[in-house]
Image (tube, rainbow, N blue to C red; front, side):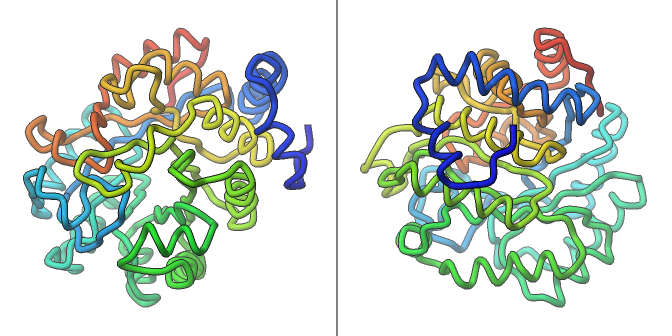
Length: 325
């Protein structure tokens, strides 16, 4: 199934739920299996700082949120947690933080270099830097830089991200690509005020950017954020439709499979939500390496809970897939 136009994308986004589940969803699942050895991928995940200077209206870690305890983990502890992940058999690691103005760039280079020497495939999300710094991160061993554009609607982006702007974000994304790192990028599905046309434009932008990973999830109304007053969680079926469209358009990319279900308290390890994501064409799970006391405060969204490898193997068995660490 060849999807190339906005009209084709909108046809699926507007499709009745059961028509989608019986027609498009299994096609996306088949495309993934045929192009990726039918394997679930797993990465260690480490949120090394929840300090952020930004005031994004939807993020639970926004600078103005006083409902969470802030922390930052030093390089030597990150390296130790990386060793723990390696001993579990994990060979990919996703390092993520808020835009922490006091976290020294030299420390980031130090722990990236150490984890690179261990042999990890390294994904890093640390916000907007300058071209030279992206090149230094690439040289230190970052394989993939994660910078979501969040929304391709420029006016919407500028309203919801007052600490930066759309043009600056897209310039940073272009500089990441120029550095030679793979680019992981994507949108938020179903935030208040978003239209299906907006989502279609988001999907086309992901294709244009030639992303390596689509870290997409539905909008969660995080406590302590201004946007939470404007609307409820993004529609789960629309999110699944986007996953399937992305899989059909880009067969080899990674797509986040840690997706919510109906019960928001089960977070991103909801068995039904995760299983549906796999059936829709997603493939990438995470094992959170943070100590429990810190994990609850890495709250980009509420109830972010992620389970360990046992959960991943259970889901892979349900979906009749292999696990690739």
